[in-house]
Length: 159
Image 1 (cartoon, rainbow, N blue to C red):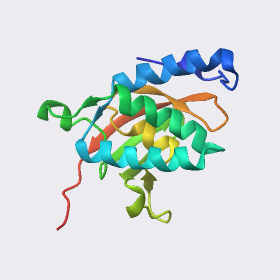
Image 2 (tube, helix red, strand yellow):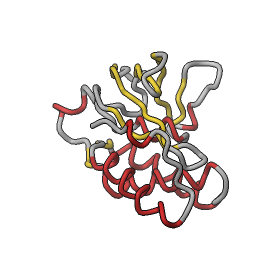
Image 3 (cartoon, helix red, strand yellow):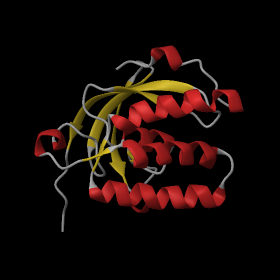
C-alpha cells in the first residue's frame, strides 16, 4: 500500500484528527508485533503520555494506534520478513537514499552506531512492518512522509 498522497499533509487541527487517526490505523493494522516489541512500545507510550508535549505528542498518537491495531507476530511465516527489535533493516524515506540500521530498544540505543531507537517516530513506524511495505511516516509537526522497508535480517542474540 502506498501513501505518497499523504506526504504533504499537515495534521495539526481538530478537523484533521480523524484523517490522521485513519492513516495511522491503516498502517498499524498491517503491522505485526512480537510480544517483546509490544511490551517495549507500551513502556514508550507510558513515557510519551507522561511528557505530553512536543515530539512526544506525535509519538504517543503513533504508539496508541500501533498497540491497538497491530496483529500479534505468532506465525513463523511472517517472522522472517517482519522488522522487530534487534533486526538489521534497509529502508528509504520518501524513496530517497537507501539507509541501513538496526532496530533497538531504547536501553540499547547507541547514537554512534547505525541504531534506530524504537522509541523514535522512525523506529516506532518501522517496528512491525514487513519487507516490501511502504507506510506513512508521521513527523513531529503532524505532517507525513513515507518510509519503504526493503529488507530485514534478524540478528542472533548473544547470551
